[in-house]
Image 1 (cartoon, one colour):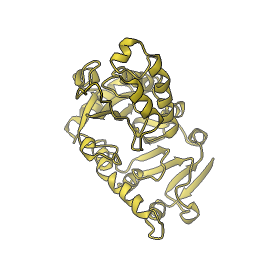
Image 2 (cartoon, rainbow, N blue to C red):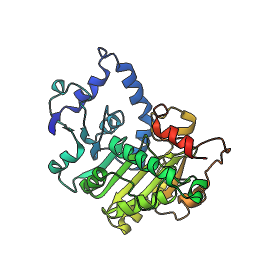
Image 3 (cartoon, one colour):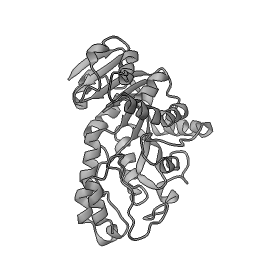
Image 4 (cartoon, one colour):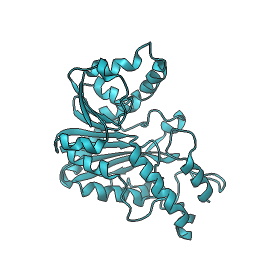
Length: 309
């Protein structure tokens, strides 16, 4: 694990250096994330906050946190740029396995834990579903259940990272692959709530794409239940989330967002929003729910097409 002190202005400027052959693609991805990120920043008043982001990669989304004055601590196992060119002050970058960085990051320090596409977590979720699907009961199969009861939703590294959030801070997670369709698996959000609570975090809000419910935006509040409820009520006058997962390829789908959980509103729960065991938009028998991945169809996509019948 290497702890690097970097200039955020130089760090982010390197991604759009015209001498880089992929500069245009990087800029497109950054621009694609703009509306989604500014929506998050506005709703949860994140401007100027301290942020810990795990698996930040090319930091397409974290750029917009920087643009709104956030103090960033980033982590990734790969170096996205030549860090020798951006040595300085203003941003901390942990190069290496996220779990190894935790010993250097104090608990109860950050306003926001932001995770978007943390690969070990997503691959774990894919593997759990791939293992469970062929073992389902006939009833589970008929209702397209893909998440087993009693399985923890989040990777241990993410769970441990929740300790880094200060009281009154937030966890904001979105997943690019390996997602769980919450219309077919409403119990999955119950499992998230339970795992969050064991770390002192209350499930605050969950959003999903109406036609691709494996794509979810999960928001948690660090603190006791009464404070979380008060914060949830304070959000009622703020603009709702209209999109997330900015690099999702189908703009029509990513602009059709439904709130599936709201701590302050008992009527907004996946079972009420979607109905138990029923999708938001029923599909014909030969159609299948979309997978939470911006990449071409992979192993788990093919597996789901085989078993979700």
